[in-house]
Length: 218
Length: 110
Image 1 (tube, each protein chain N blue to C red):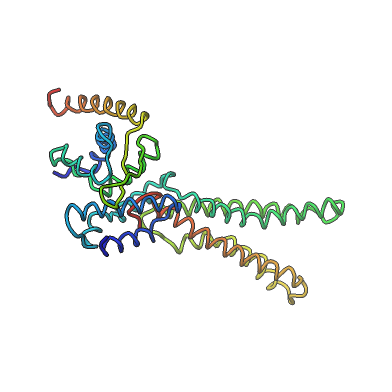
Image 2 (cartoon, rainbow over the protein chains, first blue to last red):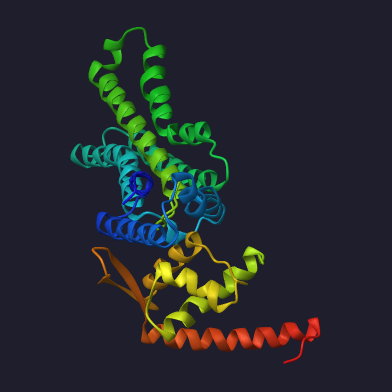
């Protein structure tokens, strides 16, 4: 096998994003096909191979515009869903904890905290759905407004940072008044949410950038 | 001659399945067979044929199996499945109806 074929196959292997078994099969077939061409037509240069095979921009463009479900990569989708669950899990746990505390203490804490946490769950859920749908819509367009997508994805983290860390600290004279545990806990939550948001945004972009089973992917 | 992509897109699965109905074929030979059978009229490149083969295989209309070649190189040979044969007949009937309808506008004879 010529070096040009080896280089091209390695390049496709790097860019092809499908299950390992399927990937092996596709690459083996690509290699076999290129060798058959060389046998019939003589040695191929890498440029000639690319001119003949590499239609990645056209394919990727078509996939981005049409956003078909069959092009969705299942592992990435699963990963994105896990991220979404992680984002929603924190306020949900907070909400459940408040109700447990209320039931345990005979509703002596009033309704503002449990209702507030319920509203927070709603806000997070709404933001998460908006984030995923918005991200999918944005990523489906020909150009990738990455910054905007990341901003949407980082909304939960920004929200927590503003309303549960910065705001309580700024409105009180000392951190000890509101409790160090509260600040640190929420700061940790900001970090987790930011990480989940970044991963989720990256996942959404990758989801629609890669056709599921093609030789020619970008 | 190069035809618009939109035209080729509709008939490529039919052309591929028809060639596979006659004899099992590898992707490499399929590309050549399409050109040869159409008298060099249809030029459907590898970048179109292979993704389409994978899609047809995914729909179980064709089946691919690795076979040993003459030398050390093995190649994947595609065959039409029974479901594929039924689908091919359906597509051919649709295409005939469509061509008849279009010819009413273009003035071609049927």
